[in-house]
Image 1 (tube, rainbow, N blue to C red):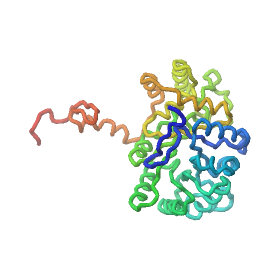
Image 2: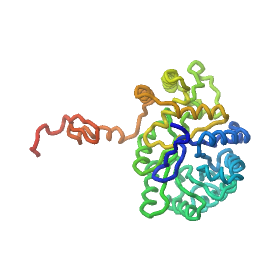
Image 3: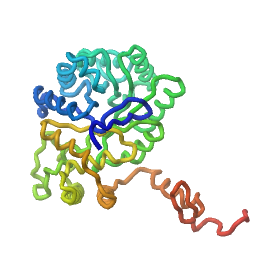
Image 4: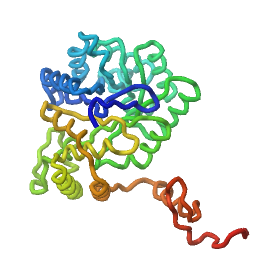
Length: 361
């Protein structure tokens, strides 16, 4: 696969690159990240390689991430129009103002105008709800987003970090009302975070949402730079968000990843990215990069093809415990298929079922 082999996002005609450039690392306001000039070089390298999908948020590096993108893309209309530019709303940028963030109509429209100014553009290609806001009725959020679409300030909408049942409710409302539907779902997904396979992934597949995973390297925990021998002594720029995952279970996983990387003459990080990008329902995986070298290494994941045996090894060592009723649904063929094969899935007859033909009680 190549970066310029584009894919449609969800049930839409929007064409995006199979890897999305995440801009959370643009700016150093959080104590780590890229200087503006390095960030701009990363953007240019990504675009030159054929990438066209860039993701940010109003709150990333206190708004500087959006500003960097605006400074670099806003003055060049051709470059801006070529990019599928995504940003998010919900983060409160004005402490002391209860309406400065969230997902109410007032907050969404104000945040959109602020993002447009920082991005130096008159439209946002994909506008994400960053996280579910329990205090706002979801139909209010949907109607506000539809208003922005009708005004031409937003092209498409999606949800990030929201429970499956709430996403399903919102998508059903939009479809029944004929308003702008959700086309994508942004969720954390990696070899260390697979619980999304219980509800979120099948929901997205059923309702036509393209999945764009964030955190495929778990903040660097799956980059390959952390070793079991140094357990308890690791320092990470993102602190406990990374170090709390450096457990024996993670190092067991990393050992398998290192073996697979050796077999394919590639890096551990590329193995992690290739695994995520190959998961069912995934459209475009969000990659972060603080340097050009990191970007080039991550883009190399598109050249990695995992064998069935390697996939099985990775799946087994990272297998999650999924919530009820996933385990129950898994045995449905046993007592509903009657020992037959349906849609290519074979079954073993349930031992408690009637063992004869024709007769019923």
